[in-house]
Amino acid sequence: MIVVWLRVIRIRFLLASVIAVSIGLAITWWHTNDITIFDAILTMCGVLALHASVDLLNDYSDFKRGIDTITKRTKMSGGSGVLPEGLLKPTQVYAAGITFLIIGAIIGIYFVITDGIIIGLILGFAIISIYFYSSKIVDWGLAEVFVTIKGTMIVIGTYFVQTTQITESVVFGGIIAGVLSSLVLFITSFPDHDADKVNGRKTLVINLGKQKAANVLWVFPIIVYVLVIIAVINQFFPIFCLIVFVTLPLIIKSGQKLKQNYDELNKLVTIMSSTLLFSRITGVLLVIGFLLTLI
Image 1 (cartoon, rainbow, N blue to C red):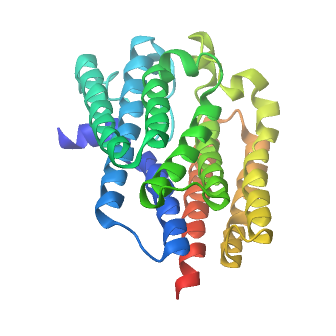
Image 2: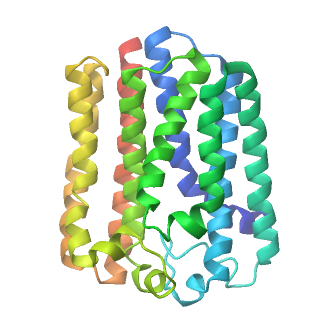
């Protein structure tokens, strides 16, 4: 049963939030040479609870709308498959999603009490958007925007809890974290195109069409790399953060393959995996870039 729950929570995708919190903490350490460990751990727990909540509620919503019963599921897309296979009841998944949402909210309220209204605004955005993500945000075609904002808020919130400040560094770092997460959502929506469209969803891939969307992939890494360059030039980031360019060949390869195979499911699985790898490695390298200044 534990394996089933880990599957429906989709552990591999939680890493995006781990990286976002880590970026916030790395920038904190770079600026202050100090981190409050208790607050860092509590922040990580709260963010992971909220992330798990949105994944669980999304799985529930997709099943109830019939999306997951007609899509071709892969290890990277099409939901967890737990509900279509009857491994859990929809009410169980929904209850778990709400439970994680409450846990995240309670942790957030603690930080509102200790750190003030800024955290309250971030928490309010998180709770409302998570609850309405599957029913409204995706239907309005704003999923990628939501994920970008979510990643940005995680980094800013993490830093603010530690320092009660918001700096250019953390804003740039947040946007980068958000765009990297949004890229993963974007690429994994290719196989779900038909099922999503039939059920009224409006993903970026649906709005653009698969062929045009394949070319839009390049926008995500371009934003990331340009922001890193601007941040380094303006000394918002240390020069070591240019290490993220190590992943350039990986995304070039993924982009080229997507352009040729955007409608072939078997090949899309490999492309999705390599794009996910690009996102995670780039995020980790950004963290390392900040930490290298302390050696």
